[in-house]
Image 1: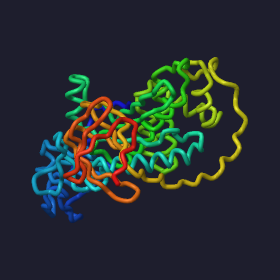
Image 2: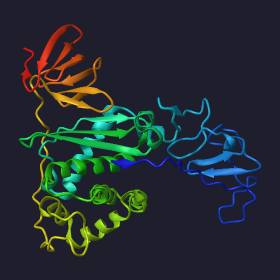
Image 3: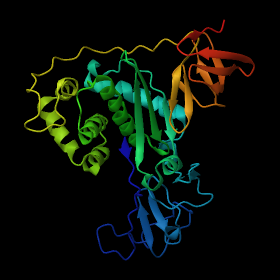
Length: 363
């Protein structure tokens, strides 16, 4: 899981009396405040990544959690349920709904498999994605809250069957969420493929996950995101080691190490022999997964509260969601959750009991 440092990015301050190359003189430029619209501006002008801000608005305490510019009533910003502000410039580039998060994760899953090759595909690739907010982690973690971007969990049965789930912090940019999704996906792959007797150093696990995010940011040509990943102290420097290892030995080297090594971390004395260059991977053709015919309750999971997983979608008691089936879409309301069954209402009327592991046909 990733840690969330509670640091807002502050806008750059440049006054008209500055003497550097970024000098802005209101006598020769027609500046209008991007927050309140006032202008032409005179006196001190503060320059943000989005444009000029008047001295009065620069004193406002409420700030955008993405870029740090001031926000005020009527300027087009939004406020999340947990009290974060997102300015009018950034609100269209943030992930706020579970459907947006699920779509983004599914796209990232395909991107990283394309990046690493078919060996990086999950055996159990139905991964429900949820969003959490800052209040959730404050409540769960107390004084240690406000530090997580995402969390992933795999439930593994004795016969090796895996059920995955991912939760990510809402209200972050698509670029940030893409990096988080790549990181959490890698956790799931490690959970499926690491032998029980291969204990890996926690910082190395996180560095392997960060490496996937780093390489995806490279592919998408997002150098600022690459820099953030490398400079983040979260892995205690292990990400730099992994980048060097991957450069010398390739991604296959690292994936093979997870599966076959018994060493806890990468260093000069604890690695597999250098692998020969990998043969080009065959082209991967992705086909849409066939939709289920009926409804299947696969079990429960607990992230804050007990939830039932129906057709790969998590339901809390009282939740009502639309599910797509092969021949129709149905509205499912979760009425009661038990260990081995769940009681639901279908399309607001028909009552059904779904028994764990058994597909319930609706016709």
